Amino acid sequence: MEDVWGAVDDLIVAERIVPAMMIMRERFGDTIHEAIDRFSERYEYLRRVRPADFTKPREEDGRGVYT
Image 1 (cartoon, rainbow, N blue to C red):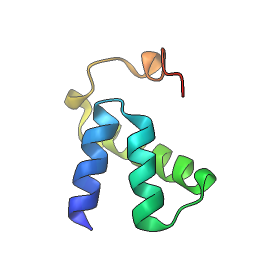
Image 2 (cartoon, rainbow, N blue to C red):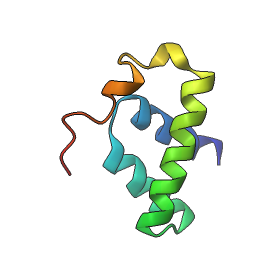
Image 3 (cartoon, rainbow, N blue to C red):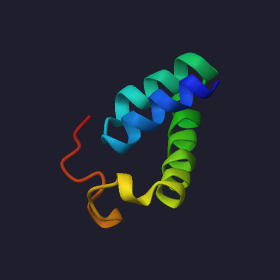
C-alpha cells in the first residue's frame, strides 16, 4: 500500500488532482465522492507532514484547475 500512497502523494503535491483520484478509485474501489473525501484527507495530511513540498500557499491551491 505504501507504493500507492507514494504515487498519489507525488501527484497531489504536483497538483495533478484527477490522476490522483483515478488511482484512488482504482486501488481502493472508491466512488467519486469517496475519492474526493480521501483526496481531501490526504491533502491535509501532506500539508501537515510535508509543508515544504508545496510551492503555493493553501489559498491558491486549485486555482486554474478545470476538470
